[in-house]
Image (cartoon, rainbow, N blue to C red; front, side, top):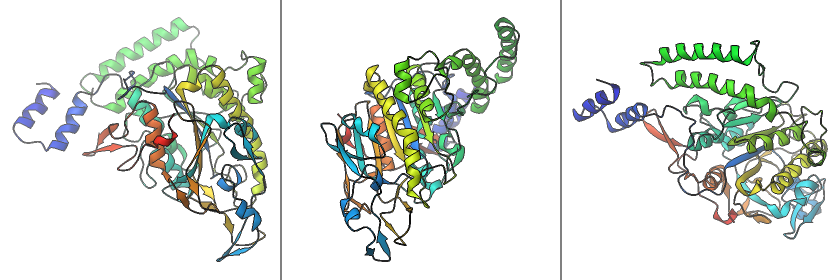
Length: 451
């Protein structure tokens, strides 16, 4: 009697609870290839996502949410604190007239393709909780990242590259949980790339020739399959075997994907880099585009780590934004232009976000930095069926609280999945006796953002 017949027999005898039965049947019918391409729940507007994450909490009132009242009342007392105006001026861009600060002129120039959300709300006000909140929908427990959910829901169209890639020079707050798959099959976990001369360690084969390597791998595969026989329900074992196969494919395709030397001078200029570049956010953005066009479902590009001197956590000095913004503004503007010129922006969702904003008030009138602020902040979306040239939601006159149309992290997640043809209510995975989803018991699609 095989596994499936055994389960049916136990179910017929009433010896299995419904939840246990469902979970066991799922294991018995699990597809042989977790990364096989899957049809979306409904026709999709987009095929892939490029997720731009600014680590540390970018100040909304200094970037995408102008507050003249703060500037006019800078230094004046408010309750136990003092108003702090922005150090940068705002300018209207494009036909839409969207206001963006002097920090981001290149992003501003693409305002007619961007939908700015000025009413984001996160679950948590500390870096760890807010970072995993925007990525996983939970601020307290390990849960799969949004990239893992997209990989699980859609599979991959290129088995020679991972379906979920994260390009991160440094670990962000919460570390690898940001791209972890948790209870989803391990193959859906993000693959971290560290910019530099060798973005993926050991990518070059050690065998003398491709034929010798293929012979060696065929032998390894034979013994792996022998070991797997009778253990088909061990998803970790299956995933490990398939990871070897993906790694072999990556040896052939990944070096070319990370090689920007054949890009045109005009393209390199868009990103503000030269042909010898192997790191920096410009390199991340260009490689992100190259991975997206080669079939990677979800590409995350991370700016910053956990050092407050080199990320967007401006507790001490807002002036650090001048350098941080210069590092990312041209590359992101170039990415949007590049995708648009290639016709890829139509079916690529681009998301720019951070874990929270910064306080509009400070405890001391001479303070040069700002504190954490999760009650309202900014994100933006572009491409993939999103409406460009709009702002959605409002914060109050000082950017302290949401005034209209709050957008939770779950709402943003549900809306991104929707553009990929995935219903966030139906994209579930049974684990520990219950069905889980990215948005937990929350999430509403923000239809006003959709074209």
